[in-house]
Length: 166
Image (cartoon, rainbow, N blue to C red; front, side, top):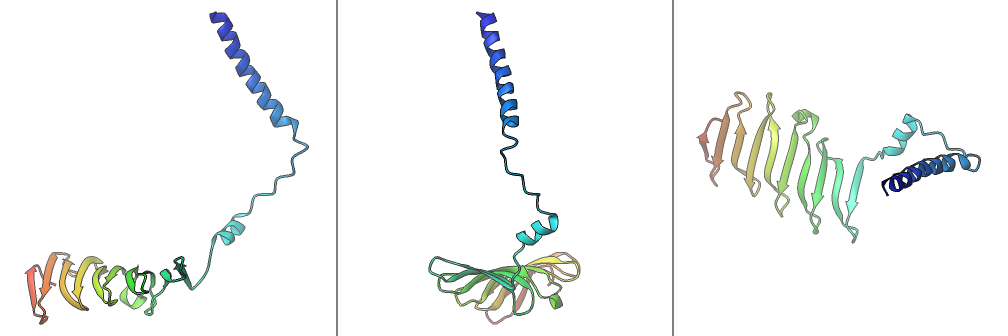
């Protein structure tokens, strides 16, 4: 039984190889010639979409996101709620502000409620928490010394350094 089993496996293997060879060579004259692969420059041109603004619309036609340049000149990805209010921005500040990256969370009045960004010559991270457009708490690394700091502002804008200096 072992010889029969081994003979069956070997004949199946050889038959599979022979069948693959015959199928691969049998219809060579029938196939249409393959088109030449596109050149790198052609592929690059076909894969690029150029626009000054790209808008993502929801099923009702309202803009929900937009990739565009900000009014100041920095690129950004802007997200809108169903009422058309700008609620989130991911982007870069404009060139005069060193094109530092930023993440802005806006409240329902479209005022910044939280900003995470880089700041200063050492590009230190800073988190700014706001209420109704006013700074309330700033946490980060001091742009001059890179030491950590936490500064709070009262409603009357009185500044209190919890630790470090800002």
